[in-house]
Image (cartoon, rainbow, N blue to C red; front, side, top):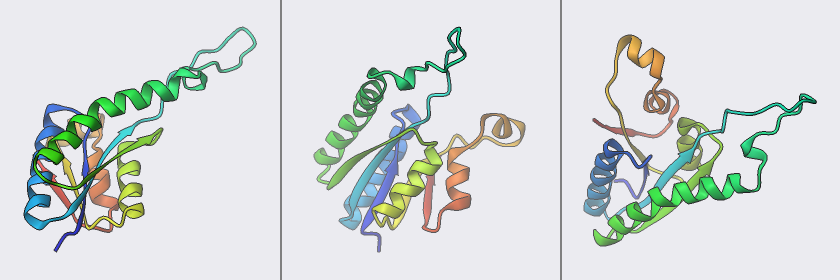
Length: 148
């Protein structure tokens, strides 16, 4: 059925539940997994006296810091996959919004299924906080399994 499953994670307790369900499904189906975490664009900048933007994202440390943070999420997830006997790859997407990164990687890796979590917010809370999962659901051309 599904041979390649993308599991999105941000390292939160909620996304850990999605990781576990996705790995369980992958093991049952003998599917390969891509565990994806996305580092959203850095939105804060500073302006010097000349009006030039001198943001953190232009510093040499920016990419290294973001990669280090991503690996703190990916490495435990990959270790969990290995412990469960699931073939898994870690993917870090830099400077993208989560929905965009997930959809792009799913296409690049020819994923059959995307596994994500959702808080299940509704109404004004969802409007104010947004939902990257809802964005993936609306735009994805492949099935999306949402874990609450």
